[in-house]
Length: 451
Image (cartoon, rainbow, N blue to C red):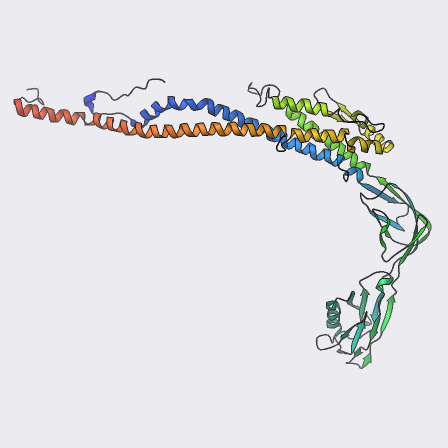
């Protein structure tokens, strides 16, 4: 520890010294013990930042890869087309659909049953009587004795019928539309309504009869209460738009476009991880080593990832990611040839699927490797490195905290001691004066004037 001097001039000057700066100078050399701890803590925190970025990018890579290895992921997606969209339009093809071709003939469209009343010249006329719909009778009273209030009463009854008012140049009519399409929703309406204002009976007319759709799917005759058909082809929903004696061809295919996008996402995510790793090899712009330069965890990531690219069993004709159009760059990153991937999907779809999804396949092995490298507790490589850093940081922070507490106590004690010493120094002139006065009183010698 260095030597700290106290400058207070002549003892008889009463000048004393600066206690605060003296205490700071004394403690500075002791506080220097924290410097290597702070340096190590800063280094660990810099590593934490890199580990966090690596963990995030590895997680993105895992998610991208899982879209290919998940049985209900992009390989299960289907898309469909109709040869005549004026007759039949494809609405959706879910993962439950199977690729293939289907022939559909639409013989009859479904219709929804509707009825309407005779015309009332004045919609505000007072009504009387009752109306029975689907066996439910609504008796007109003071709360339902106009067209508008009767509509509200019918809709509030919740009997599977939608009531409304239709108005044109001739007047207004009560419209009733079944809430169920097809023959199952056929309306039965009985009316004893009267326009009390004109004493005219109000009859009801059939607007449209409830009718089921009739179609043939691959030679099998089917009926549907709705023009939206969901059960004719498993996993496929289509809309009937018109009838036609000519067959409509419906084609269900694998959604290779989404698969190609998913593979591209994997390549992009993988390259992000490799760039993270490459960025830690060497020195920064100031010439200092990167936070993870020489880290065994970084070396483990690099080796495991490169090995995982050639791991896993073959599936039929597919035994390597290069057959999917994935190539290697000198810096460890990957490239993707879309034409090669498209050709593999169009000609060997099931083999490509197996290469990514079969037990022990490349895809499954790669995901297992990613899970072992990432931030997953309790064994992910980055997770373990972060835990180790966290433990070291906790120990360093505790040492720094303990040292700060000791320094704080010593600062208090030193300040007290030096304040006492300073007070003594500052009191010396007055004490010398008292001694001189006592000496003069005893000897008669005046020390103050040199006599």
